[in-house]
Length: 428
Length: 94
Image 1 (cartoon, chains in turn green, orange):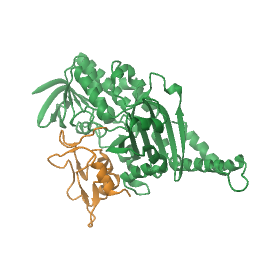
Image 2: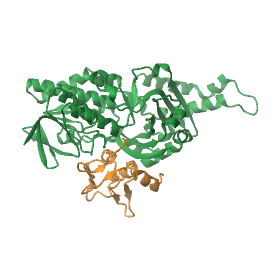
Image 3: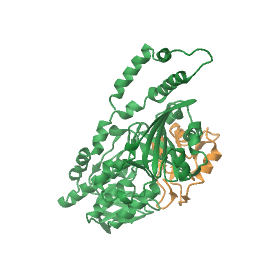
């Protein structure tokens, strides 16, 4: 019988952060990854915001294989035949330390796994965990490929579905209204072309989000991130909206429609798609967080539902890294106390509550409801588009006064609705 | 509508390692269950389709292991597992 201090299930960012932190403190850690290598089953949009986790892993960031540091932020409101883009950039975003970077998980996780192994953690790839071992109500190990591995505690970092937490009796299968599916292409494009096309210098990068007609009024939106020599382009749509809301359209068609928009097609022109991927994303925020710990088990990252959509910023990876770190701190305390029971491990929740992780989730608990609104997803892109059209249009005859033009759209009832929306939005 | 050939070509770009048996199967008797029909709409790889008898069929080749069908349809109609260790999609970019 193999016995370790701790078994970490899943070598994504939460699992790697947990294993790295515990191995550094001398614990005997085994890290199980079902893919051929860490990162081989992971998908991100994506970008990583470093500021919240910089001090948790002070030695990591200098050498990290990031793609580009993001200096150009933008979002586009898309209606049927036009779009309005807000572009935010300037010197303040180009100063070090940079706040966020585009990443490709297969590269990033593999590198982080090397750092984790260097701390002494044992990584076992191509090892799927089939079940948990329960002794007298306490999780005491896992079954993988016919072998049973034992440990004082199991840290479940097995991703958004977390079958491990489900088998441990900590959660039930997720509800469609709390999750979205992200579908993405990695499109290879010469770095010089990317720089010229997006007005970037050197290793600067662009992040842009899109919402409106591209999801046909369904909850979700599009994203574009520039990598070193590729573009990550994708679309996210609520799973419940896909099956319940009109129009009924198959998921892959949304990405095709998005790619074929002239505004987007011009940005990826000449590029070669090299990978097609998809993944479920937690979207329910605070109300859909699942159990964080139990008897002999901790849950971190997407497995606990730790991803947050704040409209113009979508975040998950830094919550994965931080929750992995705090799971590790919990295990270290539990080891000192020689107690891995439910009450001892509930320290984990307190740690997350005292950190940016659950503070963010509480602060933004209303955001998922506010964002899932047809007025934001279709009405405003249309309204602002109409106003733009009339402001910019020069007709054959005389042009109306601007105030009269705008006023035509801003009727009393529209302004009342806007006021109500504004009040709703103050909850964000 | 997305073009099924185009989708196949995109899936052809990914690296897949075959497993000994399909990791997701439709539970016997559930082929015509309305819950299962949702999978046709949500699957990013277009692996679910409905045949002339109104039964839903699943081709597992090209599965991206995203989990969407499990969330959309639930455990009652699908026997849902990840592929064995080392099998299935292996993302090179992610």
